[in-house]
Amino acid sequence: MNLRVFTLYLLFRPIVSLPYLVKDQVLRIHSENVYKRNLLEAIISDPLLELDIWKDDMSEVDVRVPSSHLPTFKDRLKNFEYTVLIDDVQSMVEAEQMEFARRKKRDIQTEEELFSGYQDTDTLINYLSKLPGAQMFTLGYTYLDNPIQGVRIGTGSKNVVINGGIHAREWISPAVTAYVANYMLGSEMQAIDLRAKFTFHVIPVLNPDGYAYSRDAKGDRFWRKNREPNLNNPNCTGTDINRNFEYKWGNGDNECGEGYAGTAPLSTKEAMALDLYVKNLENVVAYIDVHSYSQLWLFPYGWTTEASPDSKNQMNASVRAVEAIERVHGTKFVAQRKTT
Image 1 (cartoon, rainbow, N blue to C red):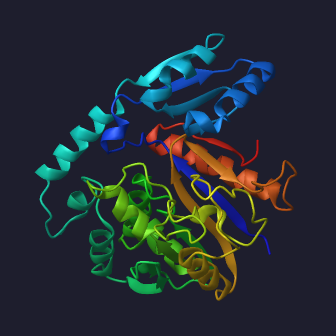
Image 2 (cartoon, rainbow, N blue to C red):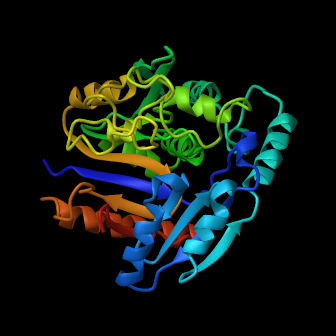
């Protein structure tokens, strides 16, 4: 099977909440060669600094630094050039919360209203369910018993699966995924042609528990995982659903860490639901997982530097995708293998 699997990282600067984030900063650190990149990797890997890595590639790293560790971290960067991207993260949170308060919950009637802000899961699903041709489905339920819902579009024999919102804080991911579904249900000739050739299975929010928690003023704007408690460590909640799938499972065993992979493959209800749903489909030709930040179009493998059997086709498709994005929107994405 010539399956194309992609991870799409969109440009989005996440913002956070909670008082302990006051005066946190986001830095962009530059590394001009492999030697300095290795030195930087050793610095940012120190768990005592409690860093939150937003972007990590050979040329630069974007990282949120807790205010309590800023002096130490900046001292370690004395041989590096860096830029302060966000001077006070909390001030951005306050501005966002004010905007949330201004936008009263209302019944979304038009796509302009839907995409004028970051909507909650129910709003996205309710809007899509009212569109002609939308075939709604539920692939499972979360730890908190919230439905994981999607929309099936088209009648083609080839199946394409698109999901967003696997990481709670990446709000633009559900928005973009819903935007794709909205377009595919529309009347443009390209959408009509695609619906005849393919059946699209679009899941805007795979992690509704975490997504809701990241939107709650009493929650954590930077929450990434799901909301299932970890039995072995009750002080730490959540599993990174993105690392909980069967294939090459096992990277991330710190229950308190952002990348905790869970107690076993498919130990989360969300990963299990998606796994079973996709396995029950025939002729799946593409799977796209939408994330945020970095403007990257990534393709397998993500666990090794070796190329996958479909690497050439995946690279060609990825290059065509980023070229189309730039041609239509003027936005530059980079196509690359996940481990490069």
